Image (cartoon, rainbow, N blue to C red; front, side):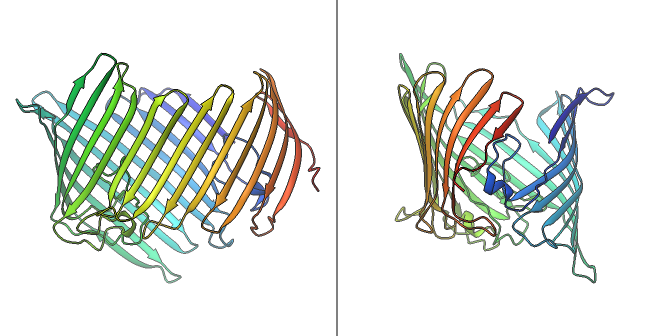
Length: 424
């Protein structure tokens, strides 16, 4: 269940309360019966929480109490409790001072793996300078961060504790040269960029943390996503963005490339991010949307001489009249991971009410097909009726390979009724 409540108070312009409760009667229930609900986004992890958010023009506060249950772990280690998780943001703007100051303070307590406990209080103060343009059109800006993380960790039955208090600093200085060539129907935009990062502090050990870089986070200030540390040392990030847009500002074609250079290796940075090397992997993205019936997104990561592609993610959609098919492809290599699969979902609409769809996924890492799903559906404004054939090829605890033939009836927006499995 999920409930959201809006209410008014004297402190914030907007305040809301959200209550989310997730529980299953059996660890593999969601995988076996695959119930369709917008409330279900993970079949292995249950997440229950109570969250209050309040915000006004330059201030926000969130208070959250959370419980996670990992259904893949043993009963003794599957629960994680966060009580509370508090985040406070404040933006300070003064007409006499160019730029702005951002204050972020967070506090949380975390208990996990039965007898492990973490308490953290962290305060960040960041200065964001105004973007300035030279007479030649070059854009310049910088950010300065002061961070004070304080953590207490307790592990083991003896409650041995480890306290860590630091004062950290970091600077990011960015240059870019945005160019545009206007046409009658389309515009072409080209923006080369450079950003220099420097911190005199050491990096905490994040070697085994999962921090795969992509074109969306490579230029972010906190790209290693750590709340109690910083990316130490100095580095230079070079990138280039190209966009082919229509007059409405919609990207019809885009290409993005970026790479990070360091003066020396930093073995404490996440290994699968490649930021620990002197020359990071080359990170890129291509988006194609020139035609209404064809579009695709392709994200890739190649080693610094492009001899090998370590990460490929393709999402392509083809539409022809009432026929639509979508392909998803993912391949990971080296330090990034081992995932490798192809997924297809195809749908044909006979008319506004009747359609048939087919989906499958091939796990190339295990060299096996995971499932086939075939669905015939009738739909109108108030109900959906479908005949579903599902076949799975994997085994997970009490979830065995099998076949299902079901009739489902959904009364919009109230409930869904499923028949017995005719395949049993």
